[in-house]
Image (cartoon, rainbow, N blue to C red; front, side):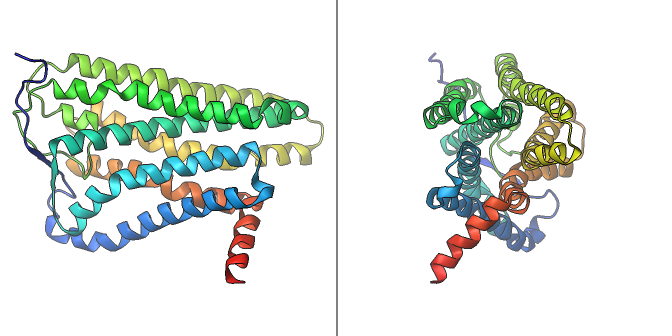
Length: 312
C-alpha cells in the first residue's frame, strides 16, 4: 500500500457558530468590516511606505513586511470564512483545505519572524544608535526578510504530507470556519504521534524561540533605557517601542490561547474554540494598522500626505 493510499473524505465541513447557524448571516456585516479594515489598513501602510521617502527606513520596511503578512493571512482565510458565515456554504475540498492549512500556518510563522526582526531593529536603535544605519542596511533587511519567508515555507512544507498519510474516518466536520492542523488531526483514525511531535517541535523551535528572543531583546532595551540620565529621554526611547509591544501582544496572546485550548481544552465548550479561533484570525491583521497609525506620527503624517496628493 502506498504512503498516501489511505481513506480521505472528498471534502470537509467548516463550522461557524455551533447552534446559531440560522443567525450567522447577521455576522456578515461585522466580518466584512473587519476584513475591510485588515485589507484596507494594511494596504494603505504598504503604499505609504512605498511612496513616502520619509518612511524609507529600516523600521518602516519591517512594518511593510508585517502588513504584507497580515494581508496574505486575510486573503488566505477570507473565502471560507465569508462563505461559511454569509452563505452557510460549509464545504471545502480536501486538497483546498490542506493548502489553506499550510498557508495559514506559514503566514502566521512569517509574522512571528517579522516581529522578532522588528525587536532587533528596536534593540539596535536604542542600544547602539550610532551604528543603526550601518548595521541595518537595505541588504541586511532584505536578507532578514528572505530568511523569515524561507523559514516559514521550508519548516511547514512537510505538514500537508504528514496529514495526508493519515486515514480520516471519524468525521469530516471541522471546528472552525477555516482549516488548522490541530483541528484536522482530531478527525484522523490512526496514530497521530508523529504529527503531534512535529507540531510541538515547530511551535517551540519557531514561535517559542521567537517570543523568547523578543523578550530578551526588551530586557536589554530596558537595561539600556534605565541607564539614560534624563527621565524625558527615557520615556521618549520607550515610546518608540510601544507600537511593537502592542503588536507582539496582539499576535501572541490569541495564538497561545488557541494552542492551549486545542491541546488541553478538549472538554471546553465549542463556542470557546470558535471564539478564540476567530480572535486569533482577526485581531492581528485588524489591530496592527490601527496601532501603528495611532501611535506612530510619521505613519499618520505620511498617510495624510498621501491622501492629500490623491485629492489634488
